[in-house]
Image (cartoon, rainbow over all chains, first blue to last red; front, side, top):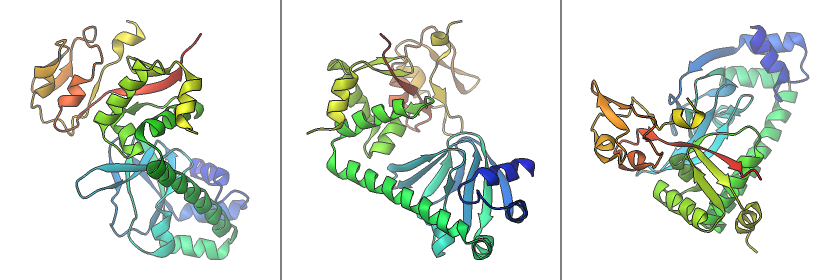
Length: 220
Length: 72
């Protein structure tokens, strides 16, 4: 319970609420352990649960009828997901899979509605969160629609280095984020290496010419 | 053992059907079928070429990468 209360006190939705309020919220929350690769949520299924990531990483994605995946977001501790069905009561708009072992906190729709009624600051914080997600998705639409695969890959490689602690990705996961297939990513990475932009090492993609890669990422 | 020698492709045992495609196609002989399970048994032979990932029909093999800048 202490860990949950500490999590809630730090979370943007609930930060600023007093101890009795946080305890009331904590009593409404269930905990769920997930293992790497575990399906947390399926697009289209009825769902009235908001998820908060206490530990681990979760990928949000959608699948085409042919099974091709488009990653929408990679989420980390402190992030939340599946708020949309909790707000509008409709099925889950996306799927979620655990990228690592982890712990999720779950808050049901009825409790969410009740808590928002008692603590309106939660609603304002959720609105701010939704605004951030809209900006993220708008940027994703822009990238998928207006940039080539090479340009999108250059942008992604530079973002990966700017994110702070290194993350590991497979070429398939990169393809899923960029709206293409792994073979195209593999070929494009080799093209980048041939052009002297990167060097492919064992488990590492090393950016050799940052300036030229940035120029490719932001074509004039 | 150096860090480079311990880095191997990862096999998702939930997806792997032990079809042996990775074993048959590995150019270095680094992956073998051991007791019906795929194992990378010769880490010093694996060049991280990615053929095993390419040929796996189930998407069970994954080669992970980190992105970094070249040091001077």
